[in-house]
Every structure is written in C-alpha cells, then in structure tokens.
Length: 268
Image (cartoon, rainbow, N blue to C red; front, side, top):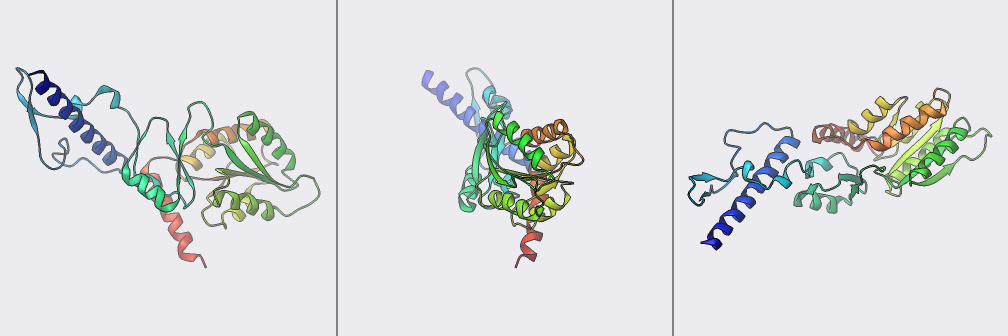
C-alpha cells in the first residue's frame, strides 16, 4: 500500500512539472492558453489517492519549490548572434531544445549571479574626446570585478573614432568580450560605426532609462557614450544600468531577430 502511494505521488509530481513548464513556455512565447491548456498534451492520467476522488494532476499538485522558476527556451535565443552569449538567471531551467540551439549556433549560456554584473569581460574604447572618461569607466569596471579589454586610444592627440568603435565591436562580435563600451564626444558616430560590424547592436545612451531599454528591449551589446554631454557620475550610472539589465522576454527577441535578418539581407 505504501509503495502504491509513493508511486502515485511521484506520477503527480512529474505530470505537474510537465504542465508547469509547458505553461511557462507558452507564457514566454506570448501565446494565450488554449482551451484545455490546463492539462498536459497526450494521454490524460487520473490518479486515485487514498480515500480521495479521482482527479487529473494539475499545476497545483506540482512541488511548491518549482513555482516561479524561470524557463529559457529556444525562442529566447532568436535574437542572440552566433557565437554570442545569453545570460541565464541563476536557477533557471534551460530546455533541451534551447541547449541544442545554443550548441548549433555556438551560443554560450552563462549564469547570472545576483548582485554582480552579468558580464566578466568588456571591450572599452574611446577617441581623444572620450579618453578621460574611458579611464574613469575602466576604474569602475575593474572595481566591479570586470576584465577590461582596452582597445585605445590612450592619449589626447586627435584620432578617428570609427577605428576604436570598430575594434571594440569586433571583440564583441567574435565573442572575445561579452559587451562593449565606446566613448567619443557625442557617442553618435561610434554607434554608427560599431553597428556596421555584423552581430553588433550598439546603442547611444544618455541616462539610466535608455540604457535599460537598450538592453532589455533591443538586446544591445555595445554601449556608446558622449563625453561632452555626460558628467563622469552620470556616465557611471548609465554603465551600471547597462550592466545590470538582462535581455528581455521572448517578444523582444523576436523583434531583435528581425533586425538581424535585415543585417543578413544586405550583408555582402
């Protein structure tokens, strides 16, 4: 009798877990629950507990510890460039299809640790107009435990911003840096130059809100800043917001994938 009850509880937990993960996948995909979606696809199994009525296993019977767990699906990887990184919330479940897609496209699934930046290596560049701010940001990044790949410039002699924007962007595109930061006078020209590198999504941000939006909605992987328009303190806040924000839900990824498709269509 005890063995029968143990088997009943086990089957309920497994069925509940399958239903919970299916429901989360639908939610992340932005699909409404279809009629009968409260039951798992395929054969419906009704179990009789000791002295209780027959009832199908539901999400309510799932182990409480499973509730609220983030789910990473293959759809979440649509906007991630080949060879890039996707940061997974600590403790999240990664579906088998997501792992297969990541392996096929060389995407690194990296766990995000609470309270620390989601990245460990950043390409940092600037022209002569942004070199002083670059030095200030390098100190900030290192204090956060981030490795800085400094692509220059290192002096205040006039140089051309596209050279340094390209150098930082290429490190990101090759997967040698998780993110990039480029500083020039306004940040606009560096964004234009960086965005010519396939796989790069550079955003010129001027406050915390635009930095968060760039990461969450647009999956930006390069941040550009205008040294003439930001104080060092304001720039540090923008960088912190950029690093602290994850790429958003699947609906954002689908839109980013369309940006990537435009890039591929016109690539030579």
